[in-house]
Image (cartoon, rainbow, N blue to C red; front, side, top):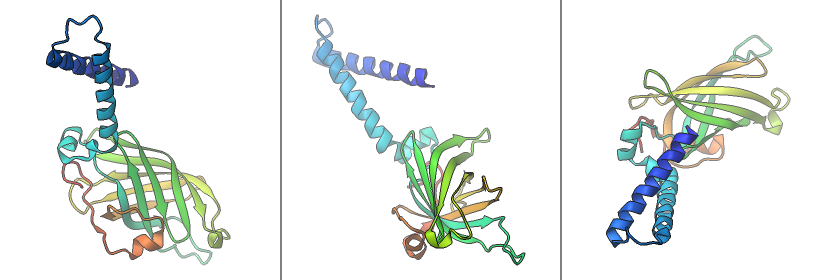
Length: 215
């Protein structure tokens, strides 16, 4: 994949150089290095713009198929943990913050008791065309919750809905041998840094993450 990207980049640089040379009638110049330099600079600027901004455009995503997840998601976590009295723990309100660029994604999950941050995350496309967000995380409980929950690691995976309102749904498991389900069906473009602020906010709307219609 890296070799292909390098070949594509070199090809684009050469194409831009040729266009600039033709426009300036400098194809026969013995020193076309300034044109090649201008071509490289142009491609670099375009690559940076695409990495940060252009990939989000609906028209671009209609070609790439990439879903737009950037923002904060609101939903709940259902855990396999059983209380000391034998009753299951109720579903836990949660917020999921996603930072996304064309090639990278990071995830933070907030509840009232803890914060989980991704150590590695990736967007994958399945054979059936659906997109999946998968990440490894480290969970850090708040001091008031450490008597019942210690720092731990885990893996989570959510599938991305293809129609309005489906949102992000999936599962997780941890090195404590606990597991559960996660569901996030509301989305806001704002960046929230805690569960309390996200859960109390009024700017969330039904999720629209699917390619070509999100944003």
